[in-house]
Image 1 (cartoon, rainbow, N blue to C red):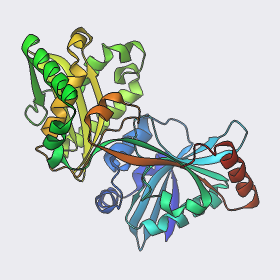
Image 2: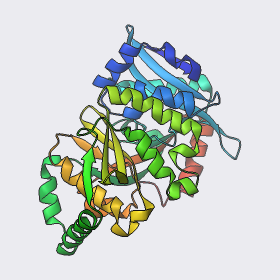
Image 3: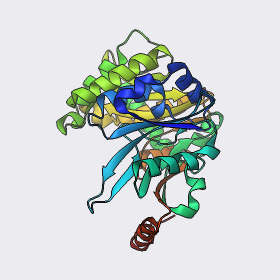
Length: 344
């Protein structure tokens, strides 16, 4: 097996066909590490030279790929993290042979001479289950939908009070604001990304400097990513409109029949109609007609709306892998002692 650690500027040297083939046969679906998403992230979201790409090949076939970052702890300890930028919501690797991951990680650790590896937001099936003896792991959950063909039954099984409230807010918005529900599948003539960005920027996210348009590099990342994603059908938008005025817009990215919900924004002038709630309800109902194997909310475990409306939860993990030397073992022991109440 040939393992390479490439700089951010060397990412374009990876054969694009092999990268795409790996994404299609990887045991773990992660659109954030696919070529159309990760290359723009490397170009626009990380300007220093601390981010690298790890690749592994067997007989000239690409079998694993994931980004890493060299970081410095406040105590002066140099450590490695699987890179997660601010717009990435899962860190599973692209890997067609998961049994190789332990060896790849160990090689990288020895090559870069670090004692600790941090892996955020990963499934246990990827990195986690192989590092149980050498890691500390924290767990969290977030809302997902595993069976879209069961959504209608789920919505009907919600408590009566919740169902009544759902009907009330929908009726109020559609009747009083003359709203309509539209998706990018039905109208491909709209510049959906532009409309979303403008809507988001006029609201509280714009005021807080957290909107896409608040940062030129973030905007260029989304623009570049969506130009590629749109051509290959990997992005979908959904919106509520009052005449031609956007009331609320959301979007998702798609990979191998799995959907990842990224962002939602609403018009502040319509907030009394709870447009974000109504759009979420409409999106859930529309999913009933799809064949997605998984829909991931990409939200936190504390998201009240998602926890109230979505039927399922998935477990994600944050792991710290300690190099199997005396100093690494000591760090692991101290870390477990300090965080004993949080470990899963």
